[in-house]
Image (cartoon, rainbow, N blue to C red; front, side, top):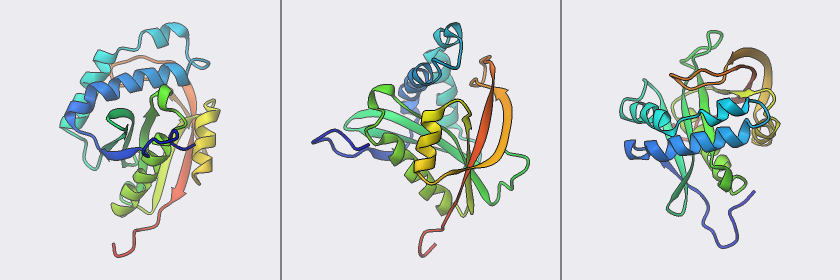
Length: 190
C-alpha cells in the first residue's frame, strides 16, 4: 500500500542510539499485534519496553560486526525498523549471504509503505555490502508477513526450524520458522 493521500513516502535512514526507545516501543506494539493469535496473552502482556530499549541501546551503540539497523519515518514519527547483517545460519556462508534479522512496523502505520521502504533499502544495503544472496526467517503461521515477503520477490527455500520467539533476556514459546531467500544484484559501478 501507499502512504495516505498527501503524505510523503516513508524516509529510511540508519538508526541512532537515541532511536532505541522508539524502536523498543514499536517492537512491543508490533509483536502484540502480529502474534496475538500465535502467542499466549500472558506472554504478550509481559513484553517490556524498558527491557527492549536497553537491548536496542546496546545494539545501536555497539553493533555486532556487519550489522546495521534501519528506521523508517513518516513525517517526524519513527514507524518501523529493520535489522540486517551477515547470516548466522550454519548452512550458509556469511561472506556471501546477508540476512534480514528483524523487521517490524508500528501497527498504526501498517499498509502505508514503511515495511516496503525498509525491505527495499535492506536489499540495497545487502547488495552494496557484496552479498550475493539475502535470507530471512519468518514465523510459519505469520501469513501476512509471508505474503508481504513473497510480493517483494522473496521465496521460501524449504528450510524450517523450531526456535523460541523471544528477544535476548526473554523467554518465549517455541515456534516454527521458515526461511526465505532472494538473489541480490550488486549496484551498477560497485
